[in-house]
Length: 298
Ligand code: GRG
Image 1: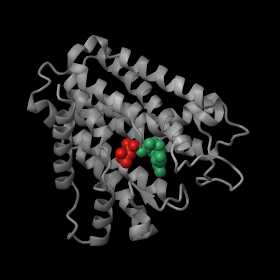
Image 2: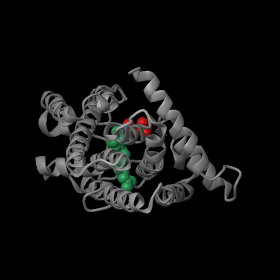
Image 3: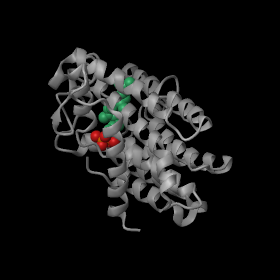
Image 4: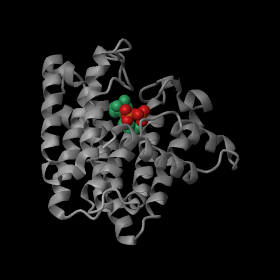
């Protein structure tokens, strides 16, 4: 498999579909639609859509067939919409208070807080409309359940984000940290894999293995993110993200040290890769993405 070509071809499909699904920038209310587009097309890696398409191909009997990808595409785009909404809201002054995202002004810096809040709301809503375009109603139902759970609470992104806000270095322990990581970031990554596998018609045992794969690779991804926070020159450790000034972020290296964090990221990603054995060569793209996720530098 030509890894670069695989990624570029799938990314192009996702870009084209997102372009089509989002209201045009010249459609009124223009400022809102421009703000949504500003964040959706700001250069994200499209990891969740790619995971979704890779999972669909991994469970399909004809992984290279175009219809597998077409079937999974609404879920892939819905995942990116939810992901982008979460970044827009997370960057707001009330939460992380960030000026830059992907090297560009955050949504509220470019369009103001009120518009940014609405752009996030609109993307979250549009994601579910996108799921309704699935090839059949049964698939939409499975996807809605999966995405709503992964984006919401208690075992989803919003629940994880709240637990993160409430965590302090004094009170947080391993359980707190794993709850935050599994739900704030991990749940959407796991959902990406599962929704793709559902589109590909995976059996119940395969769905279960892929669910574990998603959970473990999601955890490894977030631990790597924590490590990058400490080791990158623009390290954010200690940033007060929506918390009282005196509190510090609860991260994996802060709780366990850098060495243990590196070791655990490796351990989770190896465990995740072990879940793909049964799928053989069909899971090549999933393996590739798993590597990209834990080897990344940004
Ligand atoms: C506001 C409801 C709500 C939730 C916010 C996911 C999240 C919860 C906040 C994002 C903050 C953050 C830095 C989380 C760590 C996970 C992470 C590395 C997100 C960035 O994902 P990438 O690397 O981003 O896939 P790109 O830019 O490539 O799309």
